[in-house]
Length: 543
Picture 1: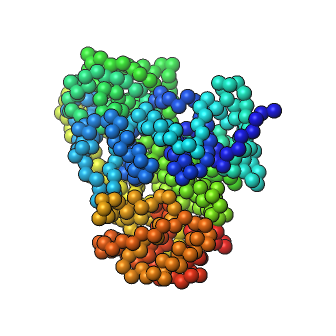
Picture 2: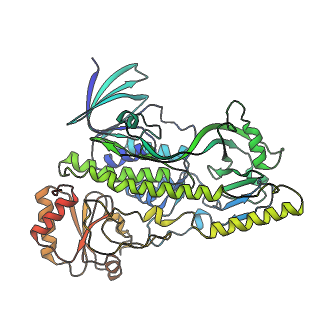
Picture 3: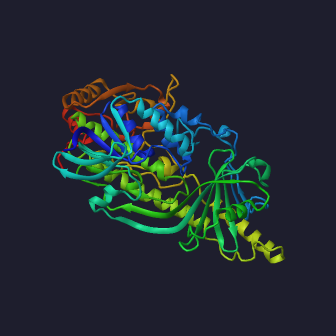
């Protein structure tokens, strides 16, 4: 008879999303087990872009500095280049500065970062290992699970010990990727477009890279040929390691006939540049969202819930947002102060974010892969020159018409329809590419620098936070403190006298959730009103 372990939360899959959820739960003192079928090592470093909002979460968990110092050179220019190959003159340059010269946005306390997954994964693993309440078990695969009213009974096989164990958990969270076995077992379909394109990723090491590139440093080179856009070459580590992604059909990218060295030479534009193929991975570009983000006490997060084109780098970043949304809610339920509507709010809040981010990523991909009349683009003729000039003008116009790192996608998502956010009647801000901070309920609470050098965001995370500005009134504070104490809800009160910050938050009283989103704001509240607000935001108000 297999031995049975008990744990409040069982996380399946130890990629960046599963590790982030484990880290958030451990940071809150919640016990959880994290199982991973592999050994935790990364063979294909598919992730590189760490969005601003994700860096803010890393700051909360005290790993932002480690990510910044992981090894990506801060003097490497982050431009994007449209070209036929890197030895040829570029058709268009979308110029961006190096990380050192990028300023922290006025709306944030962190800036974006490059950190490939083979560097990021160990940082997350080490941070999780420091959490005494988290157990990580590699070489363990989920074989099956049973749902009941009290939780989940999972059967797990330990490949090293050649044995099985049962894990009894109150909640199971599937972070097991786009082909999630948990989602399949639940019978939850993926909706959307399963085949935007086929691709093969070729990771290659090109010694002395900078000697061979006509343009110089760039984060990404996007290649055009007679067939249109055929691929891109993206830096992995800001050094000699690069990833060439080749687009095409399933037939074109048949591994039995695919010649990665030929494609690398095509990208390099020369036959005399040495390189070594490190790894090769076929994959499908998709835009798909799970019909539901869970069933009962089993939840889906990350790629198990949504699959999107990597064009824009939002896949992992969206998944880490899922983990942050789930972390405090699971902690609330396990600690006893969360109400029955709390878990229902997860899908309501995160599914629209996934839909929007996936659509934006697809739009980015289509812009880069839809040029027409490229047949003469390589010809040394007037027609060839005309084709190259036309492509240069088209890409220049396309890139000027949109933002490739739209801050509103990263930062501006709001939980407007969530039952645990209380609307205040204010109109929603316009949906635009540039993010503008708002303290409207459901939105990320605005960043501002405090007099002691901290960000307002540094106040949030452990529990609910009541921000009190001029005019808040002692009776209002007392009402919230009493209501939170009565319901066992963790609440801290912070007085802010800075008039500029008060103007940004607009109301004298602002209640912020543990994930940093505004739950409620107003001018005054009595005892019964405060109790109703606390019950609503903890998911315990009547339906």
